[in-house]
Length: 197
Image (tube, rainbow, N blue to C red; front, side, top):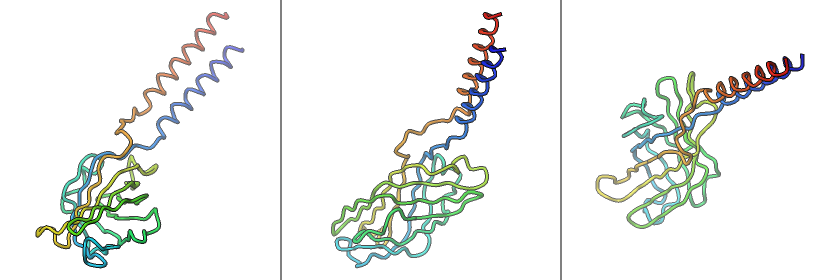
């Protein structure tokens, strides 16, 4: 009787462990680049303190978790300031593509500013939500930068880049580890039962 209880407890704990490993969120990996138009306030790169975006930006490159987003997809950027800073976290951009909603919340920013170039970078949280999204359990940490320069081809334009998250791009095992643990614990329970008989 004692062996049966031990085996039942072992199998129940193993099943619980297997479920816990499957429920974890996937990490958003990949990159997405966007281009668009904006107004700086004031207009000089060296003295600007905020940005207002003119209409939607467009996706110019996407990979990894963003691989299904088509080039040319429209993205809404939200105005923000860096002197004083917009209270964080704040949503920098969002868009919908297919069944998924994509958004990007800024958690911190650093500004590098001169008369010829403005680079705003920092840490953020990326989200991909929607029916069937493997990323719906939460966001992923990410690094980002927004570059504006006064070259003729980017006059009043910007380039936004989001690269792989700060965490490694882990591939979830789908519960195989938990299943193997459950089998091992069940085997130990059966072995104990056989030895005590």
